[in-house]
Image (cartoon, rainbow, N blue to C red; front, side, top):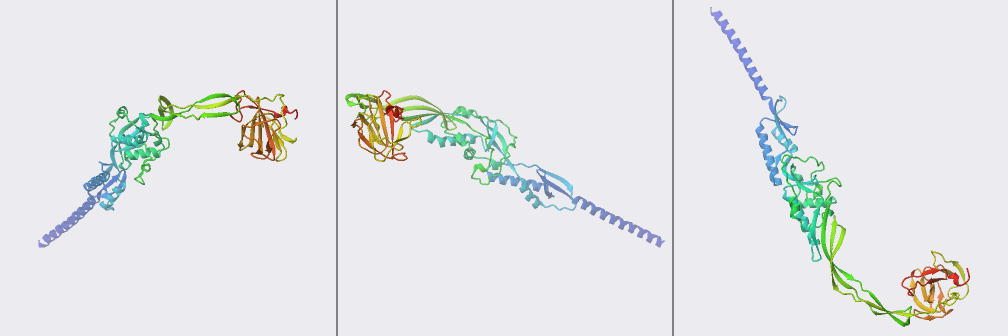
Length: 463
C-alpha cells in the first residue's frame, strides 16, 4: 500500500518538473521572440537604423527642425518623409545615436517663400513678396543718382517682360536677398539691362500678382546648389546662358549746351589780288541750351528727339576781306619748261599720278611756268617743300623742292627761278613733281584737290 502511494507521488513530481520546464522554456522563447521586434526608421526612403522608442525619434526631429529654424531665422519644416515599421530583427540591436546621426545626414528642410518669375520662367526664390519691390528700389537708388541731375532725369521706365511672384516651398539655403538678386542679374549678363529706374510707377507695382499656390516645390531648377561662398549670390544659382533676360526701356530728358557755329561774311577789295585775303573779325561761336528726349533699350540709345532749344549767346560772324583783282592768264596757252635744263621724265600723268616727275640734278633751278602770284609756300608730309602759283585760269604746283626762292604773295614772271630741285617729302631721288590744275571758277585755293588736274605735257608740245 505504501509502495503504491510512493510511486504515485514520484509520477506526479516527474510530470510537475516536466511541465515547469516546458513552461519556463516557452516563456523564455516568447520573451525572446517579442523582444526581437524593433522599429525600423526610414527617412526619405532610406533606412536610418533601428530604435525601440518611436517617440524619441519624433522628439529628435522636432528639436533638429527647431535648431535649423533658429539658424536661418525662419519657420522650417522637415521635408523628408519619416516612416516607422515594426519588424523582427533578432540579430540586430537598436542604436538611437546612430539613427540620430543618420537622420542629420539625410535631413533637409523647406520654408515658405516666393519665386520671382520673368515671363513665367523661374529666376530666384526670395523670402517675401516685398523683396521684389526692395530689389527694384535698390536699383532705383543706385542708378537714379547717376541719371537724375540738373541736366538729365528719367521720366519713364518700362520693362518689356512680365515679372511676377509665385508662392513656393524651397530649401532655405537658396533664399536670396534683394541685394543678392541684383548682383545675380549683373553676373548673368542682364544687369546691363537693368538701367536707370528713376520712377518705378504705381501701375508697374500693381501688376505684380500673388497667386495662392501653397503646396508647390520648384523642381524645375536643377542648377540650384549650395553656395560655396555665401557672400556671392552667383554661387547660389547658376542659370544657363539666356535663360532669363530683362529688357528695359527708359525715356530720359537731358539738357545739353551746344555751340552755335559762327557764319562767315565776305567783303571784297578790288585792289587786292584775288589770291589774297585778310581776316577783319575772327568770329566767335555762340551757345544754346537744347533739351532732348532720349529713348534707350538696355542702356543703348535707340532714338533721340529735340524738344526745345534756347539761345544763350548769339554767335559773332567772321569777316574776311577777299581780293578781286584778276591776274593775267597764260595768253598763248603754253608754259616755259619748269626746270633749267631738259631732265628726264620718268613718271607721267595718270589718274593716280596727277603730274609729271622730271628727274634732274639736285639744286637745279625750278622756274615759274608763267606770270602769276605765289599762293602757297609750305611743306607737306608727301609733297615735301612745295609752291603753288596762280596764273588766272590755271594753277601750277612744284613739289619736293630743297629750298624756295619766293614766298606767299610774291609776284613772279615767266621763267623766273622760284626754287631748287630737291628730295623732300616722299621722293626717290632728286626730281621736280610738276602739276597743272584748271581753275574751277572760284579763283580761290581752298583744298588740295579742289581744281581738276590736267596733263602738263600738253602745254609744252612734248611727250
